[in-house]
Image 1 (cartoon, rainbow, N blue to C red):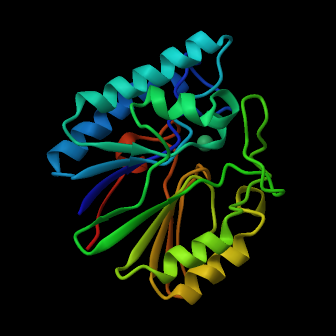
Image 2: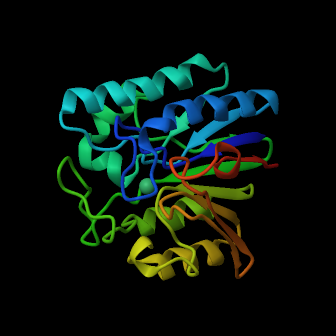
Amino acid sequence: MKLGLFSDSHYSSAHLTCGCRYNSKSLEKMMEAYRMFGDTGCDLVLCLGDLTDTEASYAQECDNLRACAAVMDDSPIPTLCLMGNHDAFVFTEDAFYKMLGQKHRPHPVSADGVTLLFLDACHFSDGTHYGPGHSDWTNTCYPHTDALRTQLSAADTPVYVFMHQNLDPAIPENHRLSNDALIRRIFEESGVVHGVISGHYHPGKDSVVNGIRYLTLPALCEGETADAVRIVELG
Ligand SMILES: [Fe+2]
């Protein structure tokens, strides 16, 4: 299975935010990314969150997300998106996935002898989910640890995990889940998790910890498209 990956487009009408995010250029970069995914024969595109950024009005924020969805719809390659902390600050989960033409957050995908598992870590450390106007990028966790253990114990193929936020211990702590050590241990003990792919930490990172690869995508809004996207073949 060949996957096209990108994250952190932060698309909005702003030319530049935070000194390094070229928000308004992201739609064009997304189109460029899909051309690369098409040219290389990707079977599936995964967007790992923070598709959009805040605007002066909710109507504009909806228009921006629909514009991202239109780019995805223009491609014959199917796309699955995960919500990031910026998306959760603006949209309810229901509104976010509906505007992208998905009914819900992505369910696991099994094909070509591998399983893709999608985790939503847009939760505060007390387990409550972020909501519009209520999120904190430095306070994130994945609370469903028992269900995760059960799910991994039933896996009979290598598993690749996709999430917005970070588990790589080489990434600054404020970007990582508050229960990152526990989640890494669950992955290690399962014996089936081969890789974890994230966004969120905009410079990107690529580490191997106790035999599991932690790949963090550089943000699409900051650099050149070719430097931000990844094309990986699994299985
Ligand atoms: Fe981001």
